[in-house]
Length: 77
Image 1: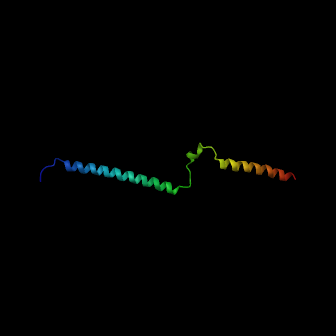
Image 2: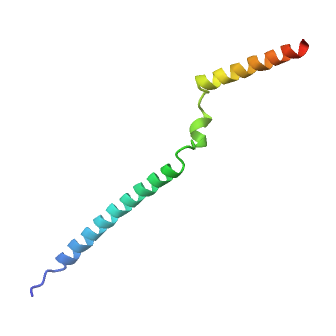
Image 3: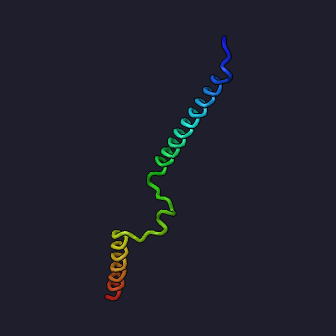
């Protein structure tokens, strides 16, 4: 057999590096997706820390304050 001066070895190493990078990227995406699925109902704290309350939350707070005021009114009767 003739000498290939290491060409086949270099080509093989390059293909292995590319293959490894592909598998790592795929694995990381799968792990991130799995974590998302496990905690799909929990919002991260930092995502909610700087946000204002929604209209529904404001409505509930207003209703609670009205209800608390009327409860005081009923006690006076």
